[in-house]
Image (tube, rainbow, N blue to C red; front, side, top):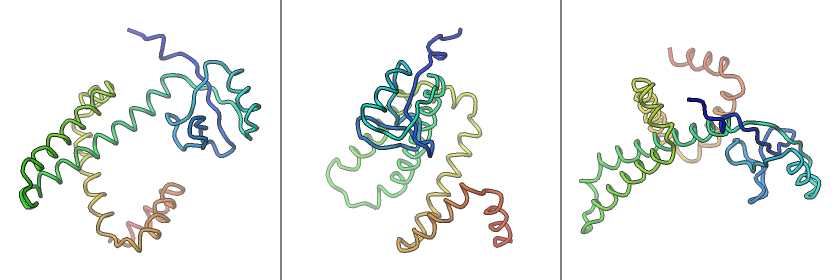
Amino acid sequence: MHNPEEDKIIYCIVDAAGKFYNAEKKYYANVLYLGTFYSTEQNAQSFIVGHNLEATVQETNYNDFAGSIATFTTKATIQAESLITNFRQIKYSLPTVKGLNHKLDNSLEKTINLMKMFNPMFQEFLNKKEDSTYDVTGYYEEFVEEIASVELYNCADLTKIIRAYKKDKASVMGISNKILR
């Protein structure tokens, strides 16, 4: 059944770099769901003029907004699953403080379940992509292990590599494959 809410047009404020303005925090965010939305183009334009912003109004729809939230909650849930897995691997090695390990375990589990409830699309995502979701979780855990193995003083270099990857994935992968042979 088609939900007409998905077609609803909403407006956001965007700067020249394509970032979305968050009126409450007064900054430009990289992701759609952190921007402030307006029900009319006129309201968004009035805000731009009233706050002397160098920006334009961008039309989007609720479906795009929901998709950006789904991406965020999926990442957050995978991160939480990774955290609880790591915690459960070391919890018996941690010093025992009466009830603390059990409370921490329960809190992490509740957090994961709440994240899944927050985004009903997550369960649909899991049902459709169960195998690839577990693959993504595995890749994420491997990624976190690799990142954690880098000394903190080398993180600036790693950040540059990630930025280069985002700019030109093919070139960075070519160099990586050549080095890792």
